[in-house]
Image (tube, rainbow, N blue to C red; front, top):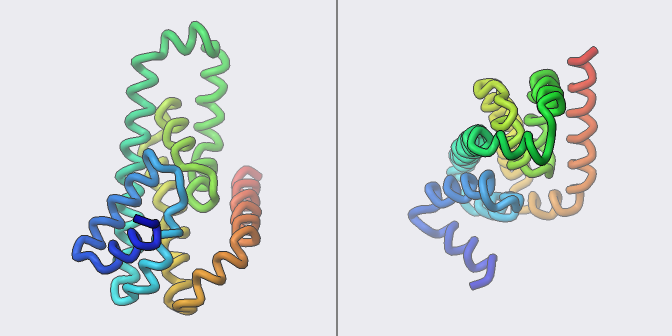
Length: 189
């Protein structure tokens, strides 16, 4: 079955809301493929549930992020001695932890709004013992901007949204990267 056929089947399914929540959970944990290819057509066809779709997509991602953080935290604790013996030193690891404590929020946030895989931030935050509350806040803000931003586009541009995203994808990515970098710089100054 083709991807388009699977998307159409999900759109028409009575399990559409749980399906998109699960897809978001999987995308944030094990399938690092942007969810937008599914999300945009789904939102276009089911506009009556536009905001609920954006909310549940964000919620699925948050559950996935929590799992990824937990995995990074506990897996690292299990293999810490091996990592310290063969891959890094205590000083390097301490430096990494300090950098995450200082810049982690913006790093995590940026993975929520840019094409950088969220899995990298989840594992880094878990391994470094970064604040779970700040981690979840950064992920939530980044993904709310991303998923509700798509919902806003669908709300205003309807069926033209997919063409707009394809046409301006790289400009939007570049703008998001510049805005995140500027915000990060302003917070550090």
